[in-house]
Image 1 (cartoon, rainbow, N blue to C red):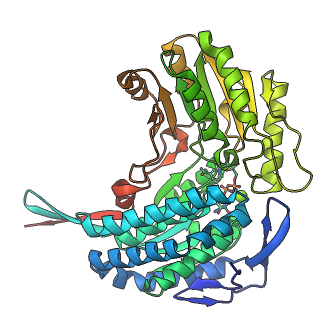
Image 2: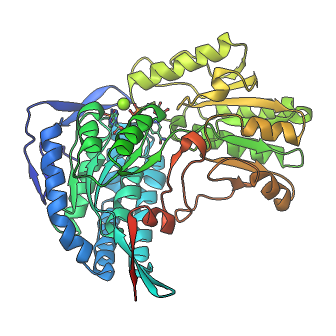
Image 3: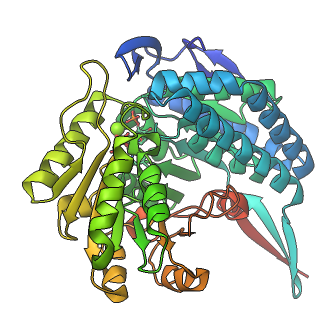
Length: 462
Ligand code: NAP
Ligand code: MG
C-alpha cells in the first residue's frame, strides 16, 4: 500500500491546503513507512461542502441502489483483503494472522451486513392516520481511532451510506493508510463523488474542525472518554446529533459453578487480543474467593503463552502510558503474577502480557482503562459482591458471565450495567447493537440499531 499525498474529496485525490504531513510509523520496529497530509480546517471545510452538495442526490437514491454500491464496496474489500491485513499490520503492529482474521474480515462482514440492511430496512411505516418516513440525518462527521482502524471506519460509513447520509471521515493519525485504502475501495465501488470524503490530519486540528463545522449534522466519534466529552459538548451547543463510542473497563464474571479453566483461558485471550487495545476487553476478571488461587495460577500460565504472540502497542505514548499503569498497580499493592513494566524489546513499542492478582476495586488498575495487555483479577465473596464490583466503574461497554447453567449466567447478566454481555463464551455478532451504558458512550453501532442512528423521522398526517 503506497500512501497518497493528497486527501480524497468529491471523488478525487487532491492536494491539501497546507504543506504539513504526518509520518506513519511501524510500531514493531519504529521505521517510518509513509506520510500523509495533515489536513486543516480549510480542507475540512472543502470536504464538508462536497458532502453537502452530494447529499440531495444520495438521499434520493433508492435504497436498493445504495445497497448495490455497498455490496460492491464489500466485494472490493474482499478482493483487497490481503492488502488490508498487510497495511494494518504495518501501521498498527498487529500480527498478520490477527489482521487477516479480524482487521480485514470483520469490516467485510459489517459492509456486507449493511448491503443487506440497506435493501431490507423498512424506511416507511404507517401509524394510525400518519405515514412515518425514516430520512437521512444529513452530513456525517466521522472521527475514528487506531485500534480497529478499518472496522471503526466501516461501522460508521457503511450505515451512514445505507441511510442516505454523506460522510467526511477524519481517521486516527496513527493509522491513516488503511483509511486511504478504504477511500480507494469506495471509489472503485462506484459510490458517487462527494458521498464519501477523507481528510487525514491531527485530532485537535482536523478532528475538532470537523466536529465544530456547522455543515455537519451528526458527529460520530470513537475514542477516549476525554475527547468524547469535548465532542459531546460541542455537538450539544450546536444541537447536533452525536454518537459516542468511548472507553470500557469490562468485567468477566466467573460464577462459582463455571468451568473455571475455560472461563480463565478465554478471558485471558480476550484481554491479550490486539495487545489489549480493545475498548470492550474484559480487563477485570472476577473470581469467587474459593477458586481464586486456582484462577490466578491458570491466568498467569495462560498469559505467559502470549509473550511471543501479541504485537506491540500502537505508539511510544501508549507504551509509556501502559507501563505507567503497571508501575502504579505495583505501587498500590497489587501482586504481579505475569509480565511487568519492563519493555521486553529494545526497538518497537512492546509491553509484556501482564496479570495482576490481589486487585481491589478501589485501585487505579481496577477503575481506569489501561488499553494494553494487562489483566486485573479481583476476588468476590458472593454474587451480590460480584455484582457490586462488576457495576462499580464509570464504564459499561461489555462483559462476560460464566456459569454451569445458561439461565444462571443470563440472570446475572441482566443485572449488569453494560451494553453487551457474552454468555459462556458467546461469539461476537456483527449484527448485535454495540455501545455503552454510563460513560462508555451514547448510541449504538452495528446492525439495524446502528443504521437507525443515521436516520431521523418525518410524519405525514392524512
Ligand atoms: P483519542 O485522542 O480520543 O483519538 C480518537 C480520535 O479522535 C482520533 O482520530 C483523534 O485524532 C481524534 N481526536 C483527538 N483529539 C481530538 C479533538 N480535540 N477533537 C476532535 N478529534 C480529536 O484517543 P487516543 O489518543 O488515540 O487514545 C487515548 C486513549 O483513548 C487510549 O489509551 C484508550 O484508553 C482510549 N481509546 C479508546 C478507544 C475505543 O475504542 N473506545 C479507541 C482508542 C483509544 P488523533 O489520531 O490525531 O489523535
Ligand atoms: Mg490522540
